[in-house]
Structure formats: C-alpha cells, structure tokens
Image (cartoon, rainbow, N blue to C red):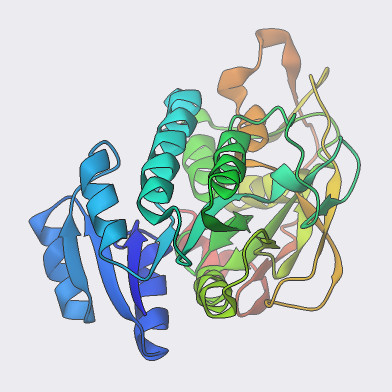
Length: 319
C-alpha cells in the first residue's frame, strides 16, 4: 500500500517509515522543510511538502494514498488546548479525503483516554467521551469521521522512549536541572506506562496490516512506574532534593489493561500527557511544595533493553 504518514520526520514517525518500507509498503511522508524531504528520500520514502496548518496539502496527501497514519502533533504544552483543536481540524481534513472509501485512517491519542473514571483501568474498549483531557478531542473527531463513513482506528500512546529520549521524562529532567528540585504531586503514586519507540512503530504497522476499523490499541509494553520513583531517580541522578505537593489537586493511579499486538494482556498504569503536566512545579502555588529532608539511593528504571540500575558511572546522562 501507499501510506500517507504525517509526522514522518518526527520521533515516532521516523521509526514508522523503515517499518513500513520493510513490510513492502510505499511511504508518502509529510514534511514542512527541504531538510525533511532530503531525510525522507534518504530513508527510501517520498516527501510531501506541507504542515498541519495547510489542510489542502493534507487532503491532497490522503487522496493520493491507500491509507493514512497520522502521528503529527504540536507538543507545545503552553498551547495544549489549541493544539488539540488543531488536531481536530487535521483529522477532519484527512477523513474528508477518505470518506466513502475502504481506506484506513489511523489516528493518535493517549492511553488515558481509556479511563472511564479516576482509579479505574484504562482499557482499549473504553471510550470516555467526557474525559477531561483536551486530547479526547482527537478521538471524538475520529468517532465523528466513523459516522461519516471513514474507516478509523486509534493508537493510544504512553510515554514513548529510546535510549536518548524518554517522553515527558526528558523535559522533567531539564526542568529539574533548571529548578534545582525534583517534583511530584501528593504521594507520587500516579503511574506512567511506557513503550520503546521501535515497538510503537511496529504497532502502527500491525494496525495498518490488520485493517480493522473502530478499534483502539494501547501502545504499551512496560508496567507503570510511579511518579515518586521517577522523581527520586531524577533527583538522585542530578543530586538535588525531592519535592512533593502538600495538597494535590487531583490523584491519578489508573492502571490500564492492554490487548494490543505489543504484548499479552496484563495490568499496566497510565497517565495522560496533560495530567502529567500537573507534576510541573510551574503549575503549583507556593504553598504546594515542601522539600524532602531525606536522601535516597537511585532505584533501577525500566528501559527498552531491560532494567538498568543507574550508578555514578552513568551520570553523564543527567549532566
């Protein structure tokens, strides 16, 4: 198939490109720059110039293709609601070009969208249209496209990482370095699920090959790790104190059940990206934090290659 891929030069999309090519598909990759076009050509894909604001270019790319995988998203969280509204317009444009055909549109959301209410499992067969995270707009738009005759599937992302970039953990490390404290909300029991970027890329390809409409895949391969453990690990790595909220405004401890092609069904935990931003000290009032007087050893953390215990010899990551 000829697949139109948005976000083709991004963190996840650039891994989807070789995954699709290896499976015998052709890739038409969206890019907004000549440098991106050169990168796609070097990878063996065809470039399609445009961006998320150019809806005509998106419609044109979708019309030229046998299927669409939409991974592009503006991750500037200072304009998160506006970015979700932009994603709505993008999905409508892509879906409009595919309406009335048998061509699959795979859109992207977050694992937290499968939470019926706080404290429950986030499940693939749950679609909570009233979810408070603005990213639910992507799935609401996908549902509207389904009603309009578009063949839609959803991939829900956790924290996606490789050995260099760790989803929202990467900006947390940068923020901790800048603030001099490592932060978590409440008791830090809220948990983040994760998957290696190569596993996520494979899931998109498997979803394409399955050609099922109306399905949602939780792209999860690792158990949820508590925010407290993450904050303690970052704090120990940077040798700064831990900070936690005295009065958290919300508490999420929402394990999810997965049945995606990535792994067997099991309990994991999830936290949507917008809720994860609640762990930012920039979003707390002055009374909400207090320093921990204790020092803790650095715990092991899970990576795509297994479980690695950080030590002083690995401090270059933090510096």
